[in-house]
Image 1 (spheres, rainbow, N blue to C red):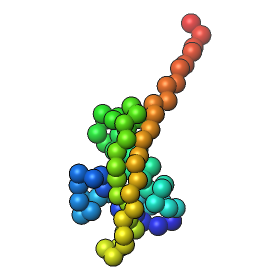
Image 2 (cartoon, helix red, strand yellow):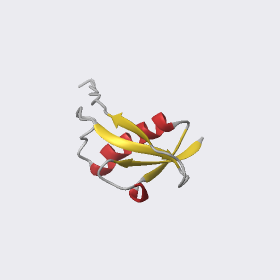
Image 3 (cartoon, rainbow, N blue to C red):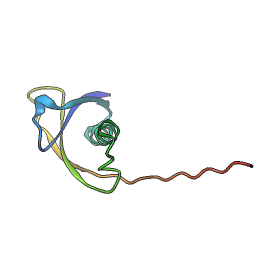
Image 4 (cartoon, rainbow, N blue to C red):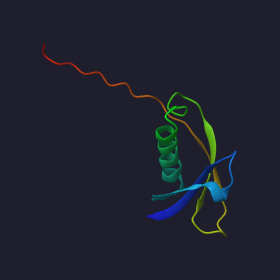
Length: 81
């Protein structure tokens, strides 16, 4: 596992959030899940794409660009009544 910093295009690296992940891809997905949960608006899960930058937690590392997106997973329940 590596430590990555992820930030959206309208922010700076210094404002990014750190994630432990196997690779840049996993860090981008972790950020998307966190962003939807933190904002409680679920913009990503509603099908919108956001551009993010992902870099190793090292000031000299070069960020990679990712477009994150998602989808809502509706779950139904039944109970005897």
